[in-house]
Amino acid sequence: MTFKVVITGASGVLGSAIRNAFKGQAQVLALSFTRSGNGLTQLDLLDQNKLESTLRDFKSDWVIHCAAERRPDVAEKDPDGTQKLNADVPLHLAQLAKSLDFTLIYISTDYVFDGTSPPYAPDASPNPLQLYGRTKRDGELSILSVQGAAAAILRVPVLYGPAPNNSDSAVNILVDVVKDQSGKTYKMDHYATRYPTNVVDIANFLVRLSASKTPIPTILHYSGDEPFTKYEMCLIFAKILSLPHEHIIPDAAPPTGAGATTRPRDCRLGTKETDDLALDGGLGLGLFEEWWTGYLQKQ
Image 1 (tube, rainbow, N blue to C red):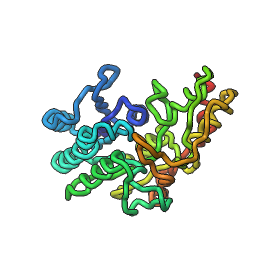
Image 2: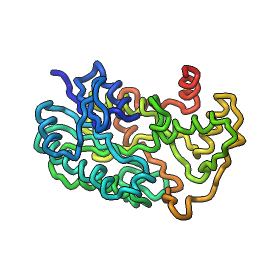
Image 3: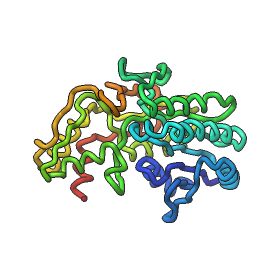
Image 4: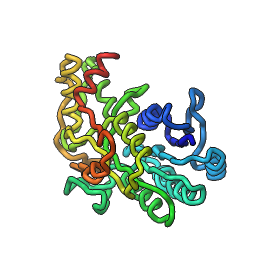
């Protein structure tokens, strides 16, 4: 019997990678809010009746829920819309997972933590510092509140990987900053330590997880283990591209002032429990500079 997977947010950087990884491994229904064609099905996840009928008709084994408002600054400007997408939709999906008998994988974030005591185990108490993190935590609580639903929370940190536009990723966009040799200067975060993680690695891990007979824990962490500030990532890109970086000014101060979105200092996710699943290939993490060297040389 063919394994069936629904991917929400399938036109995004992570969703696209997951879609590609499951190609040939499963029958995939790729849902997107804004895009259609090229294998994508346009669907507004807030349309509960349409979402339910779509999932009922497809009879999926897994639903991987990637769709979210993932930009903290944008989230602050639209709290109601962000709450609906990041918290209310996961609740509805968890209810459907119970009634339609599929497994729900909810993609969450390291930003549910405050960054004061890393590394964070899956059972650590969330304490988000900004609206984005609070809505993603609320999404987690929504899923956990539906008794009897087969659902798992997969927390990931900042993501990078193949993308149509560098602006689709908070890491990829730094390549454009390095390439901008117009004389414009950029103040770049050198305060928060991040653990950039390749979406291709996450996608391949999910394929292995779907094929495993091992019970999936309620909360899992998947994260790269190389620490960088955004400024340090820029230095790596400048090195790979052989470009000067004097126009990028490191800023080691925490975000403050009007309009500044609070960000945690270090939300490193502990991955021991994920390692303990003993899947073939383990976490399968690649190296940041090595991947980017190969990727940028093909551009």
